[in-house]
Each structure stands twice: as C-alpha cells, then as structure tokens.
Length: 330
Image (cartoon, rainbow, N blue to C red; front, top):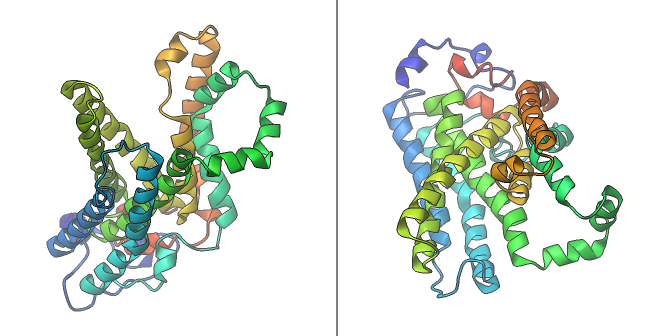
C-alpha cells in the first residue's frame, strides 16, 4: 500500500474532481498508505462492525429474530450504534490528522448537490441488472400492471407495510443503517490507506463477515444441520461481499448515501435471483434471455449511469492521494 502511495503523483490532479487537499497533522499518520494509518483504519472499521453486530445481541431473548418484539428491541440498539457511528470517523480524523476541507456530513454522503440523479440513476441501474428476475416476477404475478399501480398508490398498502416489523427491518432500517456504517463511515477511513479502488473490495469484507452472526441463531434454533448452516453462511458471505463492493462503488462514484440505501432496499425486496426457478420456468427461453440482457446492459451502463459529472464534486475522492483512483472519480 505504501509503495503505491510513494509512486503516485502529488497534487489535486492525481485525485480527480472534487479533490480538496487533506492536511496530515502531526500525530498518527506520517503519510497516506503508512502502516500506522492502515492499522488505525482497520481497527476503527473492525470496532464499528463489532459494535453494529454486538448491538443486536445486547438483549437477552429466547425468541427468534423475526419475532416483532425482538425486531423492535434490535431497532433501538442498532439505531443508537448507527447514530453514533459518525463519531468513529470524527475521532479517526482527529487521531490521524487527516482533515479534508469538507464537512463530516458531506463526507458521509449527506449533501444536496446532485441529489436527484443520485437518487434515481443507481436504482435504475440496479433494476437493469435485475431485469431477468423482474420479468420472471411479472410473468408469475397474478396481477397486471394496472392493478399493481393501484396497490402501490393505495395508502392502505403503505400503512400495512409500515406496521409490519419485518418489512421495516428489511426495507428501511437494515439498508439505512448498514449502508451508513459499512459504506459511508468505513470508506472514508479506508481510502487514505488503500486508495479508492482497493477500498471498494476491502470495505465489503467487514460487511460480509458481519453476516456470519446469523449462524448463532440458526444453530440455537436448530434451523438445519451444522454443515448446511455453515455452507449457507459461506454463500451469504460471498454474495453480500459482492453486493457490498457494488454499493461501495456507487458511494464513491456518486458521493451520496441515498443511492446505495435505495439499491440495498430494492435488493432485499427482490432477493437473490431464483436462477434454478428460471431454468425450470414454462417460458424458460424468454426469462433466460432477459437475465442475460440485464447483465449485458448493466455492464454497458455501469460507468455512464454513475458518471461523477452528474453528482458534482465527490467529497470522498479528496481523501485519495493515489493515481489509481482517478478513473473511479472521473
């Protein structure tokens, strides 16, 4: 890491649009990519991940995780940890002396510049990726589009959703808190150490490992054999890490938190693509074509639809002193 930083050119031109010089004060970090800086970032991220997962288990209960009482208690603890998580970034800034000339809220993706495209484009891009599953769902749905729109605009539907604790957890609380903690707070701490591109793949490892806590409950309530539970956990680690890399990419490219949160909520709703069901579908050829078309279009549109020019100056890009991040921020 430090070798890459030493070889990188100096100056704002090496950092891409939105770069504002950060000032390494006397203290922990002698320079970007230093071992002290990297240890500080890793320890801070590990502490955040442990605090987030640990907050789920501060309540003693013999009830399963989907019980409304358990969900409500976990809402309380996880919202407290998530609300305090920006303090980790502030403390890390103070200890390392890395102080970009931007506000902490802007660094975490809370800003108004480019908010409309940052809300729409990442979600549309994710829907393109899930074109196959969306077509598959529409084929199997007993409603037509008109009925679906009527339900969507019916206030009673949303009252029902908001009164469902599992819906609130999966569609609102989990996407918001996980993206805040595992993307908005961790990426600014990792980028000065690793650079932009490596941070995209380092950050999701904390997110993937954090999901291993489901093993505890599955073993406790005997939800399958030990082998099947650990195999399921390994699979979940794989796809949550890939998804985490995608939302980290979105966060860096847009400089906003709203896009990753909406994409996270959408993916929680759709779930992992039912590939086996697609291959056994009565209209298998059509479904498979849309699966492939969605993936091709996604790869073609990935960079154009996340072009930083849509979103203004990207605060997090100012944290990178390495030339490797230029393509990510431009």
